[in-house]
Amino acid sequence: MEAVLVRLARAPGIRRAAAWVRLAEPASGSPLETASRLALLDAGLPPPELRVRVVRADGRVAYLDLAYRQARVGLEMDGRSEHGMELAVFDDRDRENQVVAREWTVYRFSWNDVHQRRASYVATVRNAIGR
Image (cartoon, rainbow, N blue to C red; front, side, top):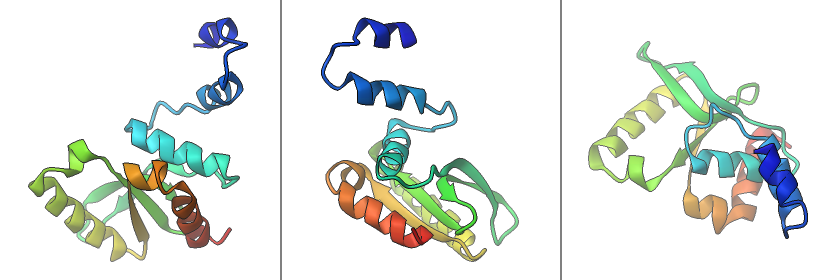
């Protein structure tokens, strides 16, 4: 990847792209999770943790897409492919309820929130983590 960045050194937007490539996280579960995380970093917020393990109220384990563990704030990114199916939506709601019962606050965001309403997305997260 670094070789491609060098080859495109004069291309418009390459500095930002290079910075993002250097921030890539293999643990990210989707392009939406990556875009969400990068939007927060671009806004000067601390990096959220990826795939944070939480023991649910029923004793099972859940993983939050992104989270600020100290603030007990989880960020769930609802992509159309995973969350467009009815059963997945019901499972997500149950999982979320079980995590909230463990005194976490969970926010759900979509592609439109991150890309079309970025300022609102960032402000919501900033307020949630007290920054």
